[in-house]
Image 1 (cartoon, rainbow, N blue to C red):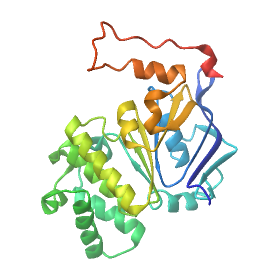
Image 2: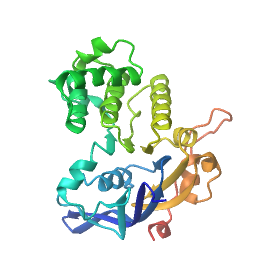
Image 3: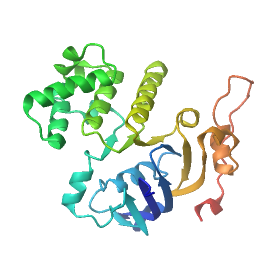
Image 4: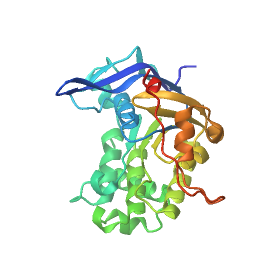
Length: 277
């Protein structure tokens, strides 16, 4: 069976004052219709990897890979028209903060309807009805009020639900969620994750969850890839994340505060130059 995502030996570089700066350095990942978590520190290449798969990096980025495929399509060499058919329609990207991702001068319902119409080619009333249905799917209790609201009139959790509804409008095969709950409190975060889990399961989609939160990924995902300085250092089942063996993953876990025992001082991560390969 063809994997949903196949990445082999992906490199991404950006120009710098002293020469090319590597952001992703030879990573390889394969996934099907499952939940894959990508964790690591800021700057480890998590978001760049997701955007490379959708070809949403700046023009100055230099990308090369032995394979960069989505459902058998070679993303690295695909024509712009092919990528326009894939983005949104088959691959959706949920960004971190809806306040900066939604159009501030457009009612959110119209934004969802526009996303639906762009890929489904229906009429205005069909798009409006679909937008109401999507708002109900993401468990918004008063879809009429939210449909007519502007982004600044919604809470962070409500705005994130609207973002998810927009990404689900074309019925994609893959969702890339880039820190989708980092700006939310713990209760709303749990609600959003339960919602995403239900929707992914019901629709048979694949999900890439990019996060700094190791305990959250361990609970939510099927597999985890741990990135450091543009490389994947360890890949393992999410349920076994707390038993990881790589010193970097162990260091990230040990830096987390514990409630079950007193720790006078949290350790700092000791980095090994050999991790850079």
